[in-house]
Length: 276
Image 1: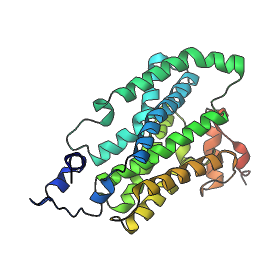
Image 2: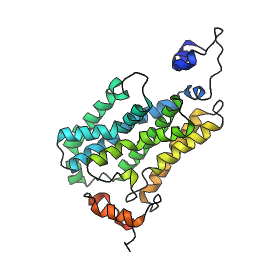
Image 3: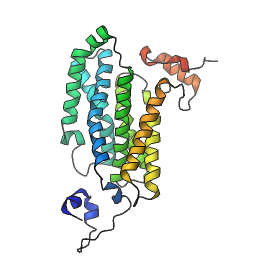
Image 4: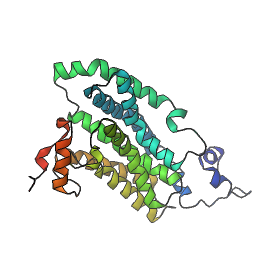
């Protein structure tokens, strides 16, 4: 192993390298050897996705009547909340949370909030652009897919049991939005069927990654598995935009929750049967 590759490996693996330099990585350690292109693509989408998620939080805060500070806080929570919850649960090895080590995420959230505050009302008023525009929703799906794959990989890096890789991917993808909705006094979209199947994409994407990677962890193509998981997550999310399918739920109870929400624009009551 060359010096650059050695630096990329976790300390637990480095300790197991004999003096001769030969090493037999464990099944999960082998998943950590990056091949480059796909991982860099996902990292780029991760940064761009921070813009999209921050906009969603800032927009929601503005519509709820919050001031600029409130918009910044909610934008930040939406953008980095999932990764923060994940790292708090998994631990960071004595390091600070990722956005404290790399403040670019907070900077993106703040800049996005200011731009949203200054520009969005005019765009909405003069050009009729809505937050539900296809381009915005597609960008959101792109970001969610990247968050899903990167979150699943984080579970691998922490040597968690394979089923927990799925949990890590889902938490990273949707928990920022869940916290946002709770702070706004709304039922979390990811947990209720009154909109689209928000959580189905990350669940399927991270599950596909886990199933493919855990079959033969020493020999699987990490880039290929990452691409497949990304495309599954993205495709399911975009497919759900105009699809009436929902995850299983009790219809009567869902209507009660929907009719009690304050944000009527967020509710698609056409999917709900009449209460008997």
